[in-house]
Length: 127
Image (cartoon, rainbow, N blue to C red; front, side):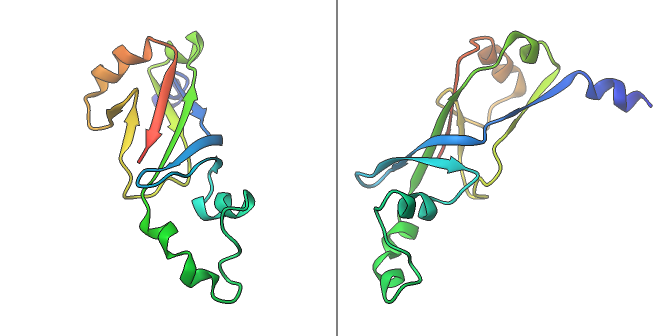
């Protein structure tokens, strides 16, 4: 099975955990969880109340109307860098997101990412 030999040359890096969350068209900046939902993070930090209580949902429509940006810093060590590919695992990202890596949108060629990975200090942003 040649496929198993190739799999040993790949690695995965979990980006689950605390991320910075910023309301792009507003003033809110909080810490949140990935995977997670911005609404849950806003509730846990006392910014909004439970949306299913009384008329709260109606008063919180701005949450869904806002653009939220998630960002985190992560490091890629030498062992990971020497693999043929690295899968960045960040479950829960919305299907209509733009993903930025070192401030550039994800629509780049793989070779360009490989050059940037050599910095070993990376920032990922989801808008």
